[in-house]
Length: 421
Image 1 (cartoon, helix red, strand yellow):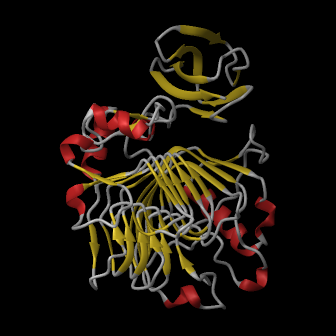
Image 2 (cartoon, helix red, strand yellow):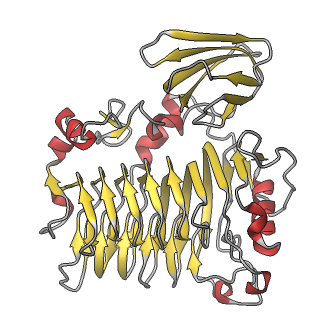
Image 3 (cartoon, one colour):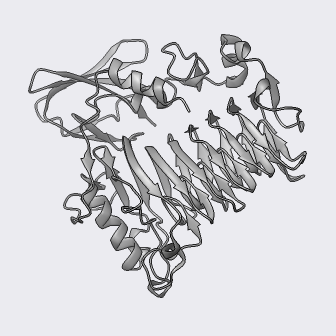
């Protein structure tokens, strides 16, 4: 994993890496928000996240249908063998459907200290841990969305396992930095199985399983514009992006692939692909494995760090850019056309939160700001707002990406990136 480069970037950008809420085992009800896109429920500390988990697991989760939640700070779950994470949706079966089916916006914050280890209580119907999966979410509804969230931790379990979700979900602009290990089949950095869609995201974790093992998906699903740097290891159907998948587009893998038992179901991109599947414009580091199963194209490290590779990967889009700050070991990162994972997860988001993002009509602003200036991506100032900037109209802006420069009451300056849709 590329943890060192990410830590360096924290320091370069001056983020206070101690500014986080640490879970102390207690719960606290969410106080702010109404659950709409423009007024989401605000998860403002670790205790409120724990309350959210408790209510989903015990109070019949359909109340979350189409509800919006926004994380406003970094959270440390303080995980250990004696303080394991209770997966969201792992309540007793008597409580009915436990799937979260709303929208969680991480606000480009990090949840760290996520920890699940072998624990027999996970399969105990009399406990809060009843589950067929080990992951942050046991299962997500088909329309549930998780975006702008960095998840860091570890999962070691004798079950179908993953970082984010055991089954299903829509993921946008997320980072999975979760080491996942299981001796079972269907193991992945993001989603173990189901029919998930994952876009503009990165897997940094090392993933190890038996069969159907991938950086993003164990079995089935769609992955577009994503990259993997973690080591992927298993015995059969092992791939840098997916163990088995239905669609993989504009992705690359530079993580090592280790596959035992002499199987040919291994690949730099995908281990096994159904006849109806589609792999388009995908590449992998030629030294990541021996041989090839024909899915994706092998490239040298030198070429994959070049502008020619960025152009090839973009395929007439402008999603990818050169890693000029060397935050990803020189390999391509996401550019200004969308949220840059390698930048926005490490700005000083504790001072200002803007949402919704992307926005169609207006954005809400949380933070003690006096004024702001909005610039387009060529540096032209297109708007100035002062006075009450809790709510800023963007209806007069063209579709695209903008930088907002906030002047805070304490004299500091905070810059945020937004997308006008």
